[in-house]
Length: 395
Image 1 (cartoon, rainbow, N blue to C red):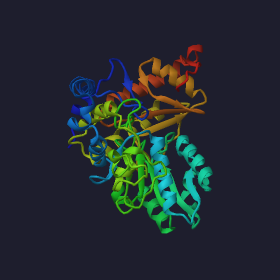
Image 2 (image 1 turned 30 degrees about the horizontal axis):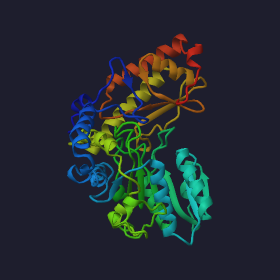
Image 3 (image 1 turned 180 degrees about the vertical axis):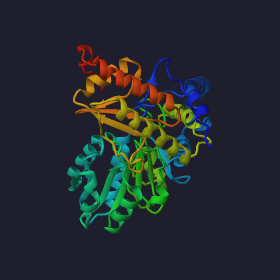
């Protein structure tokens, strides 16, 4: 049984704050500050450029990738780190399209994160493909012999709706398409099993439920059956078979290494490694059970105590990730008042109050305080204040 009391203690959670926004940015692991300081003092400052070999900086993207692999149902040597999530989406999508040259349709859904759709729009225009976007519950019916790639975010960023990865992957492959799964709102929150689902590609970020810090690097996974055939359009120095031969012609590195692009973000990866230490001994089954306990309790509490909020997430926990959202016409102001009162969630246009439950550090006390505070704000109307109507750049 996983010890979530111990994992909670591994994070710096500011006094007086109930943090329910780990689905946007995870809190800082206590060990991250010292880990980064040691890297800078003992490696960068003393080893200088020698750190690439002596401190293992060059191999860091694969080493860290192997640690993430366990959390997403992947095997050793199948995951590599680096760059941003949008870059990894671009790599996976371009490689998948190249593997299906006789098809030109990218299928996605309207619940996908807009950034993924932006990448797909740009790539489709450059490669003579078409992006087809349907409602989430229409995806299966839209799969036909024109579809090259099915690209979905497993857990919807607004509603928390969770796609059936195994079922949709099987349906897509039966239609001759490949699958790309964005795990941004899944990895570290639910029991992902890429290998069991027989998925083709997956990508994800590490600053949400994996707590790697703002701007932490993304990851990419390719099923071993495609690893030697996948040909990324974005051919970077670190993805070359022999980077330090300085060959003017690109030759892809073996397997997942070809999905490396630029120089690894060594300082950021040091912080991420400290965050991944917290996962040692954590069972994904226990993680999922804890997630369901917290989200079910929150839904029950809000519906009992907070009239005027409408559930915007699936009621069935099997169809939901580790986040819950409610709709209210004054959602932005209500969320700002809630944050001012020490309960941090976030807002998504047009009217969604969103709450992420991270099993490593959230508990039922967080649920109870959030419900009580939200109920008070709605009851006394304290959200109706000019200060809570002003929108900052990041909402």
